[in-house]
Image (tube, rainbow, N blue to C red; front, side):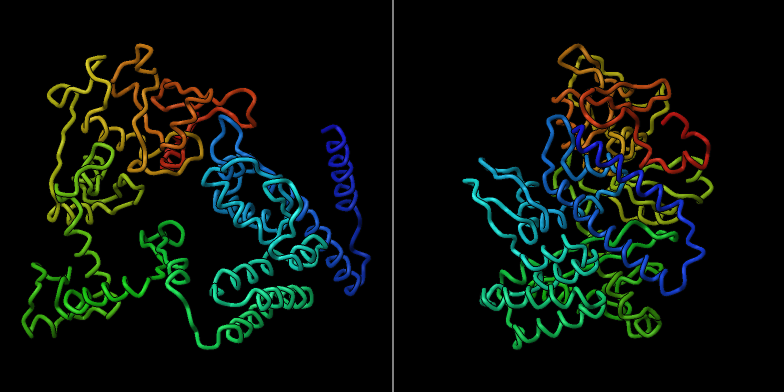
Length: 467
């Protein structure tokens, strides 16, 4: 480590000296040449960084590797996963002697594309994308180039012969060293059409691509954008549903009483677009399922929308409520949704409400306590964790097995992965303001703290100090 520290200190000195150089006297052509040299150097540093990332392992007591990397580097978990995927495609990694955990399997699968590999018995193996890996380590490719090549192979059907795959990888790597990423993307598209001119894909090819994700968080106006890649089966099911429930006049939220069999007059008055009608049809589909007692429970609560709001906002019909999944809901929407809901109403006034102070008479938190925790914590309380309340478990800050009480002020929320950290040296404690502080083992490169992710309003109100 002392040798590496010395090299890094020398690098810091070089960067500092370069930053102190007067660039004003350079001619315009020379400035482009300087930028070209700097870009190559930057890419090579990224390649070295990826070589380190590719060797990261799960450390006992730490969260999963992507989360730990995000916490240490102060980057988003999404960016951390992207770097790991890139790194393990272009960086060497050590041999494995046992069955790796699920996350390690995923990282191995991604890494093998560009990283020098080793078999389980230790012998070296070439990366799955050898030419891309070579150009990457030479500093000739940018992350955007790599993304184009990754996308090409992700969408390539399995029936393409291996010899054609190797030739395609070599071609893309060569063109990537002389082209911009947008130009390379056009070459990759033409190459994909050449290798699969009939557009033939198997069920496995399609299943590999299926998915639905939200594209980022909620927008400023509360709206959300999602990306759906549907299998033929799901497409057929949705089309069948839309035929009835996305027809003009059906499930129109603008109507006082939305109809399933509207009259011609009602249908003609429907000014919604085709896309808006399909959106409202999906709303009706999901709303008809959530809250149904037949669905059972999730973490001790009904499978429905659980909303936390202040009495003042409800009375004023302004502001936002927060759901157990972390979604912000305008108060008028909450009031409107209540007309369709299976009602689970609980009033807690500290005197006449439900008893929340159960002492040691019961270890499992009651549904009432879980609802109160959703309202207070909103999600996992480990610093930096963005898991919403519906994906968490109840944790006794003072361990029940050691005499802890099942009281609302000694309970908190933790997602399953973070909950398991408490078996590996992590500790929690309640601060004077009621927040939960997480304290990592001293040997880990993480610091103690509380989670402010689920409470952005505190930064505006001035209540975020110390949390």
